[in-house]
Image (cartoon, rainbow, N blue to C red; front, side, top):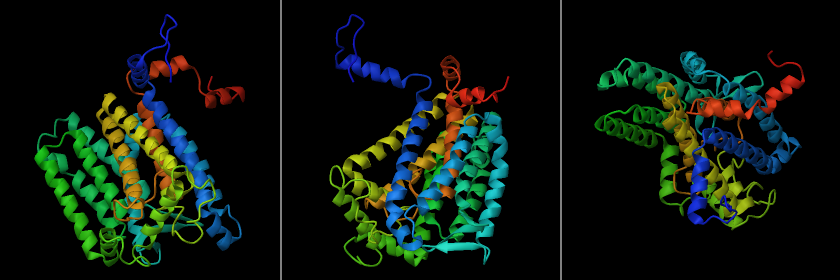
Length: 415
């Protein structure tokens, strides 16, 4: 990018850097970064779901587009939800905190009822709702973010965060209940994400260092216990520590994922030209879709995905830093931690630097239960971004958006 000076000359490197920094300082930077990264990851995800699932679905259903159509349907539901959430006031999110948390707890209990919950991959995560399978632990993440942020914001306003007891009660028991219900379903990946949200809320609210370290130590101990008591989890950890062993059993998926990424090289084999999805790599469209990205788009494609998540991280933390309302700050930080840590755990498992936990890559992997709550959370971040200093004035100066213009053209706009 070249920048010209006011006198017509070409700006030097310092001026170009200053211009780039100036772009990041604009009031709507966070808004456009969250929106842009979300849309690009969604588009990539829909494309990769089709590529990764086409062979298996052609064999199973006779159509290569089965999962692609389902994912497109979930997106058609989630995107309006994201748009609606982006237009809601903060008080609406606070009002939804307790009902959403309660519904999540009830749904997680129903998952554990024999005959209602559905198991796969060693975990009981789903419940049948008519023709659909719902994973209640996904909306539980959003419920914990909203409830925890609302609870701590109220306590901060009352000045009750100076001692450990008001800080942790009832936040710790509430988060512990969600974690316990998810643990009983043997879902370690979601347990890690819920614990991450809990720790992020404590960090942002300014928990004393000694207390935070103690809670973090208890979390690590809990995760270690969960790994030791479940044989298949222990097998995954030992397989991670010794990748060369059990290549045809415990380590098969991880090794095939590494083969897929390695075969992609710098620019990949080309969209749809990957070989891992031909019954070599299990769950290619969900847990290991990043491996298909690496195979078909190469190192360049994986760096693009990492860059998008990196920009999203910057935008989410920028929102949390710039907004004034305590609830908004806490909810923005919790949502950012949820999505980013989940992406790190998924990508880390695919490239072999973390044990496999079986959680999807946000916005990219197949699955409506994960996609819709994530899109609503992103819409909430967009709503928060509008509350940054100068953002409302910038939006007003920009004029009505495409949706408002379309409603006006149809005669449906509010007069």
